[in-house]
Length: 356
Image (cartoon, rainbow, N blue to C red):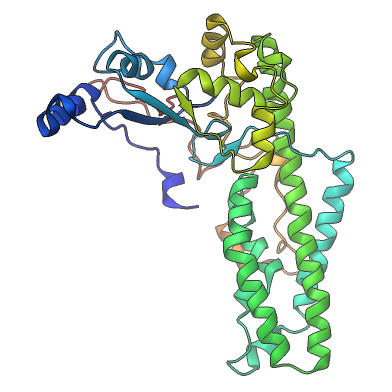
């Protein structure tokens, strides 16, 4: 795991907005151009509206921007981070009607992919330097090595889209250019297996996030009768986000966001508003937040393909592996909660940062 996931984040001092305004006056007199303050605001990161400022208990960041005549810009209305700084998104994801069959298909494809690699590994290792490296070409073995680092869909998609697939495509081209016809045929078959492996694993992650999205969707409906009139989860998140800022940036370059926020939105053009008591209840609820949604569910873990399941021999890497008990899962690399601050340093929740 990256180091930032192994160590709890350290508390830091928030920026004092009064001091920033004073510095602006010194630099540009009363005609200074400081007019905007930007912060994230969503169902997880709502401290700008729900938490008093540590340097002024009479104000939240939202009320202070109003008092100082500043325009508040809210961003990430449907995107949030959990306690391990892993991105989550308030979307409904496709659910699988037969998860058991999907998992069996995935394991079957994963095993066939790794077995397919054994057909040419000697030729590649002993071949000329013009051939691709096995780290770039063997997607199945690469996934087996890093599978337990894949905690959620967005982490997985970043990995395959930016690190795996581009190198894999280039490796296939190099292999086909420098190989006879039988290796080219192998490359075509292996490409299909590798892409099926990545596609099936993505569907498993989408099912997992679909379950969480349904739980959050139902929780919002219970807490806020006003938002329950919105048919889509991302629409509910967008409407909530507009409460916490003067202007909300919602990624409207994506057409689906635009239609959900305008044409199909019962809140469009001020037709409805969220009552203040419902806003407070949503901020106080853990059910609508991704903040404590960090370790992957043990059911979503795959057995490591090296414990005698393919070759029949125990892998040396097993000595470095830690077994996770599905009945009592403990994830030694992931802290379940942040470290408690010392008595000399009182715990604070700066605006834009979630504290458990």
